[in-house]
Structure formats: structure tokens, C-alpha cells
Length: 245
Image (cartoon, rainbow, N blue to C red):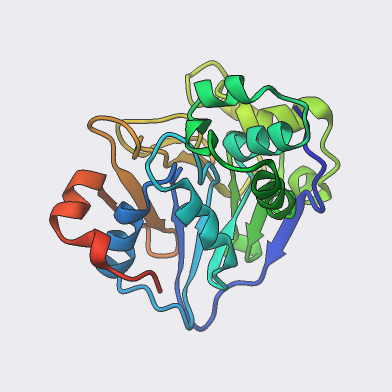
């Protein structure tokens, strides 16, 4: 289900004027994000929020999540659910299959609207690299076996693209952590965890925001801090009425 992307890897300079955060799989759980951004005192003038992808499907507000792509402080990578949306828009995947993994929110969405979303999503990279040297960190959706140099090259085979978007070997304990030697700290999502889990250089921060007992997690790499909240808890605190930055 390979999408045609404008770029595979995008580099960002270190943030010298503010803070950087990384958020786990959003899956339309925008109210939880509203609460967390207020909790961390997010400043849109100088802070940045990176996303491991899967903005859409399963949760209630997929279109609100897609609107985040227009925020100048928001930087996402492509997730497998966005990849599925693009495949449906291109006619390479049946809508019913996508609905089965959470895409039913788009059942009444006109084809033209879906194509516009897909056009925007195709501009997202598979990988974002932030900073350089010891302070560097990477953001991608699922998993990667290789070094920073191989990641930077961006010459991904079809199998590697599949791994970046759909892989679960490392998160499920079926991959060799030694295959990621030479890789900087890398934030991933895709595989829901009860809590953040680090395997070698890769940190899995999808804590199942869309499901029962799940929470949305946001981390601050430089300070090694993290915050989590469920959609229900966020709404009880009035998150639905909070404006996004």
C-alpha cells in the first residue's frame, strides 16, 4: 500500500527558542490534546509539537485532527491510517476495508473531500529528524531497524517503508534491538502500550488514546518528561471548550 510521498525524511534544526514535544497516536482524540497542551503551557510562538502519525480513525474527531496539519507549530509523520486514507482516495484500497480499521468517520465524506485530505497527507514525510549530535531525536510511526545514516539517506525499500508504517516486531519483542545500533533516540507509535516502552533506541508512546482505559501521551524529549490523560478525564476538566493554540 505504498503512497507516493513528496519526501521521505525531513530535517529540523534544534529548537533554541522554545520547547519540543512529541505526541502519540492521536486517532481523533483532540480533546485530550487540548488538555495536554494547556497542561504543559504550550507556547505556539516558540514551541513545536511533533506527531508520530495516526491522526485519524477510531476516535471522534478525525477531521479536527487533520486540521492540525495547518498549524505552523505542528509537525506530523505519515501513519498507517493516513496511508490507508490515501490508498482509498487513489482507488487502491476498498473503503469497506478502511472502515474496518476505524475509517467509518469518512462514510459520508464526498470523494473530492477525501482526495483533498489525501493530497495534504502525501506531503508528510515518513521520518522527521530533529537536531543533530547528542541532542538529536527522530520521529517515525512504527519502527526502524538501522542507523541514523541509513535513516538520513531516505532511500527506503518497499519492505522498509512497510516497516516504518506497519511494523510491530520490536514493540512485540520479536525484533533484535541490536539491529538499531547507531540510531539516535527515536519516538514511535502504532502499537498501543499500557505505558511508554523503550526498546533500545526506540521509545513507543502510543498509549491507546482511542480505547477503553487508554490515554493520550505527550513527551518532552530534552527534559525527559511526559504527561498522559484519557479523553474522558480531559472532558471532565472542560477540555472540549479549550481553544487549540
